[in-house]
Image 1 (tube, rainbow, N blue to C red):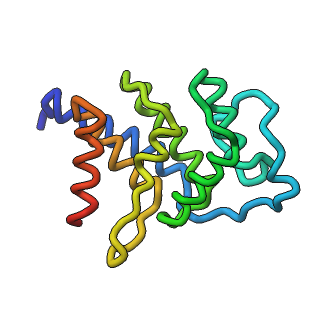
Image 2 (cartoon, rainbow, N blue to C red):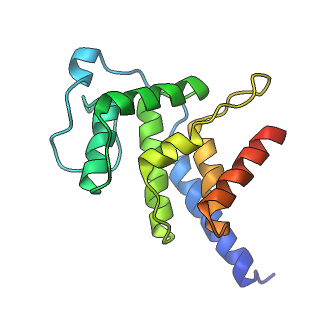
Length: 167
């Protein structure tokens, strides 16, 4: 069976998403003690924040924003945003920071310019209490698939919210 252009493109996108997300565990990694974890990022850019890097997720995300020459709030505000997202998902702040930067890069490869901190805020909405919590990586994957098929960010976000409200 020959797959048409549009279906082949969808399959390629799904394959890329599956490969990227398959390399990452949804297990919450233990966080480092605060005395080591409060150190700001000073080394070169890191594409992924590992549990033993000794860098707080908010500092790593702040460094990412500054390297992208994007507006960046104080690290304490980023910390609060990550903490809010961690309350809504079964992921640590470190994994959420990794996922949102990963999503930003995946969208950029599709020619879609979106900011990691904005994505963090927009994708961190909570599910109704009766719904089972999902991982932030799953939410990012849902958004990615909707966004690459949507003409606008707002349409993709609306579809994501609607999908999460009725599932």
